[in-house]
Image 1 (cartoon, rainbow, N blue to C red):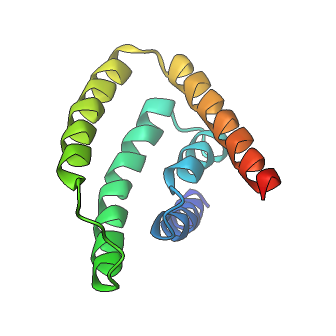
Image 2 (cartoon, helix red, strand yellow; image 1 turned 30 degrees about the vertical axis):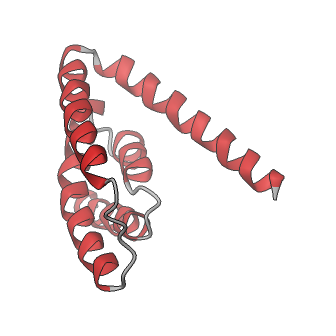
Length: 120
């Protein structure tokens, strides 16, 4: 049953990741809530799957002409620097703190999306 759920969760996260909506916002809660994975393990799994999904999505979006390269260097450099800092911080924080922080992030993201919809 666990293997089936992992495949199902990977499928769901892959679809949302390919659409550009962030598969990790679904994958991490699915792994922690339904499979009881530790928060740090779930985030690690998400990072590995993200690399594969992002690479495939990048190739497809590039072929369709949806990639804007102007100013991308600054985004890449700042992304590398701050992801390294975030990874270092995450190694020292307890899983419970990471879980709460991720929950707060998802709540804020939900509120922002609701506000966007209501403005339209």
